[in-house]
Length: 283
Image (tube, rainbow, N blue to C red):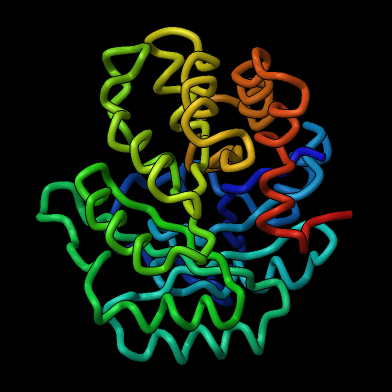
């Protein structure tokens, strides 16, 4: 089964689910909004069996209401990952409450990317955030990290402190792929793979399109498989934040990028790894 591990959903009902853009990123949520029901139709048409609804920080900030409600309303298809404020001392308690109230809530997203014109956050390895990680371990929640390459040393230190916690790195940490294969700009990411076996790398359309601009996206996927192993790689469309082509074409890009892998590795990247991390999505 194909699983899309990186989707965002936007409600049409803005009275119930008001947009709360914090000023980070583009206005994709206005340009190409997609509801949970619309995503389900796109999934079906493209042969995608399940999806992870990842809170879209650019649209809603820390208000996870729609992603949580949409996943709960579609238990056979979705789970949710909510963003919490890592610097808020009340966040561990908030995570406990989410776990009690939302049966399809499966993890948190630590979004450590600020407006690019400003200095980036530095809290990813701050001890004040460790209680949040501890709660996730206790409740068996996954931790999804969105960060830039400059944050990877901080992520290393936190991974070392929590070696048993399943961690997923959004967009592979946005490595620099402009020089093309063998992608020396991804060396830091690839070295983390050896040192921290609890880290999984999300291979999103953002990464595949960046690789496509300088060659074949399959070259990047094969490079990542050599470092992480297919069992620690998982695909995500980034729809509708990535909307330069129809959803079905993003799925086709993923298939093309994985075409050079063995059948076993291809199945892992396109769905098997996701099902191991999110068994709630298994049929």
